Image 1: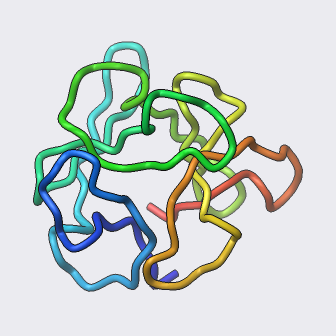
Image 2: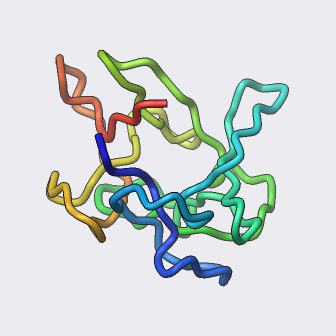
Length: 130
């Protein structure tokens, strides 16, 4: 796909939205991937130094994904699972939830949210090709 995760307007502030966007090579779309001793993954935006975070650490359908200063909580930890030809990014708080594109609409600016996983072929949430 020509789309990737992106921090809206290359913001460096806490709470800046994470969205889907056409690849453009900017640091708003560059993330460092770190693994901890428990097997969780943290995604740190290269531009802001902030991590992908589940707003309020609340697992419910449609909950927003944004960036926030690292605080070590599970709201900022993820599990990457192979899913077909890509990967699902699953919440470390509740593995029945994964990153998802709001309304399944693929366009620049589509919001990234948390959504309950539907375990069936070809529908495990947002698939990321790494």
